[in-house]
Length: 481
Image (cartoon, rainbow, N blue to C red; front, side, top):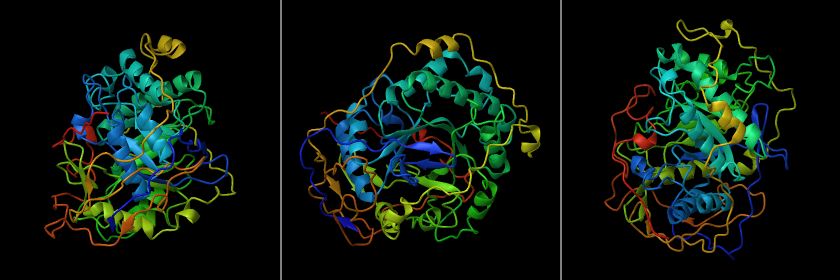
């Protein structure tokens, strides 16, 4: 489907906020309507590693012109959530957060970065768990806690990526969740969920889940217990099925969950171009009682060939065939019905008490004694980070995209703009229209996405367990205001 025009925005007033969501048992819930939210998301790290530069004061949410371009395209795609892997708490995100908010989109934010001292390491995790590291994670919370569309924070991403890391990492990864939740409780006006994004390594996946979601105290008041759990999974490749892709194992393994579970990455690119036939299953009756949707990997085209949109250094962009294929899959679903469901009337499953019998893999850590706070960390939690970043929604005066964006066939999309949504509205397919039909090919008539050599096994898939910020072939995308 080619995009010829998007609706122009009317007025220049401060856009209404999306409704702030709550975690109620195993669901994200809109407290105003009582409806569940199914995440319809895309991994958003434009520019890869070049898109995050602390010295230059640059991250994916620092340039409002770029955010406006991408919010318009994601709004037309039908997305309601972006996952951002690497953010700089010391730069201003007000305009970008306000743009995505007006477009009806939530933000799920990783608190870590690929730089030394800004993440928990898989090897010798105790060496990376110290006050300065925690200070940086708390600063990310401070920078984003006041935006109503901040949905959740990830305390870690694939820090456990094989059986060996299962021996040492779990207590430290859970401790980071504890520390973030304690900081949020003291310094945020609202509860913001904190959880972990796991690699789909089946030999340790359910032990990882059990370790992070059990309760040390036997109740949900345990501050080290994750509020959410997510996984990066690439087991559905091509025109697969619920059983062939082993999604049935995921549903069975997570049955009885006491927290929201969703895909923090999905979208195998073998074969390529992708057909995204898993979309109907993820949001269908086989999974929607256990899973709360998912995040497609990824928005921008990088060397690993998972992109929906190909960006250029001058800010121009071109849709890839995968963008249109994903849009077509979303269009097949009734999102008014999907997003209008109430939580199950039955009582929510209670988190199990943490004990060694929850762990079944030999060598995986079954000791739930967590490390104490490193020296100096309690003072930071008590007093807050300094200097303290802050964020707020601001007025956006022009919603029209400034850059040239083309369809896969090379035709230019005209009048591309974000359509600000009304009070308490969440984006879904059809909120911003401007599409006609055509197959997803480039101007030469060939498929937009080359075929990479990948494996169905997420652990073996090149680039699957690497943050987009450290993916190969990154390029910078910047534009002056």
